[in-house]
Amino acid sequence: MSQSGLVVSRAVVRRNYAVLPPEGMATSVLPEWRDTVARVLAAPAMGARFAQYLLEVAPGGGTQQALREGVQTFLYLLEGEAELELNGKSHRLAAGGFAYGKPGSRFGLRAASQTRLLWLKKVYVPFERMHPGDLVGDEAKVKGETYMGIEGLLLKTLLPADLAFDMAMNIFTFPPGFSLPVIETHVMEHGLYFLQGQGVYYLGETWSEVKAGDFIWMGPYVPQGFYATGGTPSRYLYYKDVHRDVEL
Ligand code: UGY
Ligand code: MN
Image (cartoon, rainbow, N blue to C red):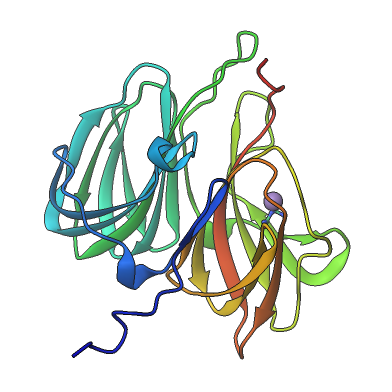
């Protein structure tokens, strides 16, 4: 006898994109993180050129670590509260709080309550003698901008549009019925976490239903589009590699 849900899944993994619904995300133990349930959302094993994780940290749990030279990081708190120590400076993060750590950062995180966060690591691609600096912020304090002149379609860019940075972390908000204005096809990758709402995502040559809690990896040149459905605005946080020429 089969149990409901075991034989049906929205998970799709293709050469250049993947959709991972939360119920099928298997858990991992990461040795650097105490009292933490980790889910590896994106990794080089799937074709991604970065790593992204969903972490559930129990109160008092967390990490103390030094990133490998040349590896930068980004954290975004979905839920809970945590103390962050980033290269010797202390910060308090609550839901919507985020932090960027420069390449080779030393950081520590201690959850003050049950905490859920997104964590991303990427090898930094240098340009001239520029060096990105650490940054800590709160999404609520970032002003959104109208995207491509479409009133209501809002884009928040959490990292500065500065050539020192080789990555962007953005939050898109789509009121119900709104969509991306075009089907995009670009060399940049995305690691996309669906924060709120639901919709249909065009990936490759098919539409997939997606909703809060889903993760989508889009590799280079995957055609992509989105329509928000449902009764509440849809919001997603996404990573994008930017500001660098193609490596030959
Ligand atoms: O910035 C972007 O490439 C964005 N418009 N892509 C996306 O939302 N899939
Ligand atoms: Mn895109």
